[in-house]
Amino acid sequence: MADHEDDLADAYFERLEEVEYPAADEEPGIRVRREEGFAIRLVRGGRTWLAARDQIAATEFGEALRQVARAQPSAPYPEPTLDRAPFPLLEDTSRLARFPTLVTRAIRRQLAAFPMRLRVRRHRRWIRVIGTQLAPEPQSESFYSCDADLPWGRFGVLTPDLSAATVEGLATSLTTLFRAQEAPRVEPTTCRVVLGPHAAAVLLHEVVAHALETDTLMLGGRVESALGLQLGGPLLNVLDDPTNAPESVRRSSDDEGMIAARRWLLREGVVEQPLADLFSARHSKALTPGAARRGNRHRSPAPRSTHLELLPDESSMDDLFAEADGGLYFPEVSSGRLDPLSGRFTISLPYGKRIKAGSLGELLGPCRLRGTVSGLLSGIDAVGRDLESAGAGWCAKNGLKLPVWASSPAIRIGAAEVES
Image (cartoon, rainbow, N blue to C red):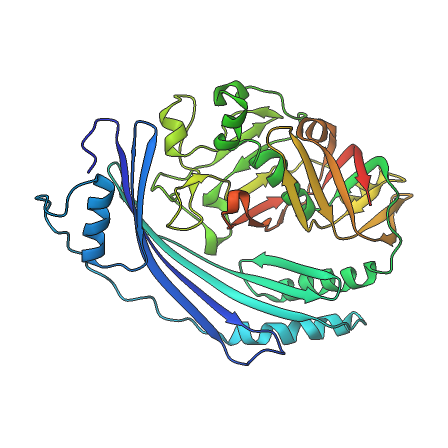
């Protein structure tokens, strides 16, 4: 199929499993959904041909190969053979079933009670990529998603495990959200803002990772023009490192079969290496592939982050609060959006607290943080020293829903635009 010198071709196999423990008011019982399939891709002269099937079988594989190669069924291609392994065994689901009860008990220990529909799912994914260049080891991922439907909206988290710390963290977030519904709203202001590790992780995903994906950079012209650009201050050292993600979602290769490596996005605020897939890297010697991800087998891969890291500095939380008197503290982000053409972003914050005399004061209701990528990143004047694993959540850029992960300390922004 790849009979031209510059052709790029690969076969992508995947298996997916989703195990759900339903909300209390739904029909009881664990629900299991499994699917498998493959995609054949050919990239030639800037054009892409893709054929996907929803089962793994030799006949369908041969048909997809001929479809992408644009060959007639009678063409003298040898029929492929596939040795199809059985689907992996279903793992123990008892922890999944206990989780909603444990969260409810933790909420009651915090002296709160409110209506809630909590769903928890375990996601597992197995992939194998066979290309014209490499055939890396199979990859697998396993993680959990928790979605709470509340009278005032939906709140969700991703987590690599269902540990006691996950239970307490989710219960604290839900309880604080409940109490924030009656809290005063923030008056529109520009002030110092401290973002906790989880909020900082989501912010950096929106304003650094998305801004430095090569398909985003191509919207503004040449990708190479971003290299060496001073995007933030000297405290900003940001990497994407799939090999350092939590163990259950760690990757040694990407969804094109290329080796995944530690990639400096920003070093002391300067753009060093954008997130690139094979297509963009083949057109620029300055780019390195290995950051391609697929939302599903029916779509071509695209450059995305996997595990974002902000390197810590020397400031404690007390230090961050001490120089932010009269400012605001936000521990979490509910959603974010970046406009790639204007460089403006909006971050939705479910609740916050005032900072008074170096300490946290009254609880505040939902608000939004707005600004430009360059304005915000240049305004970061302190980075915390305590690094936390902070799942950034689901990324839905261009309709492709992908889990993204991060580790980050807290950060302080010298002047940020906040509105209710």
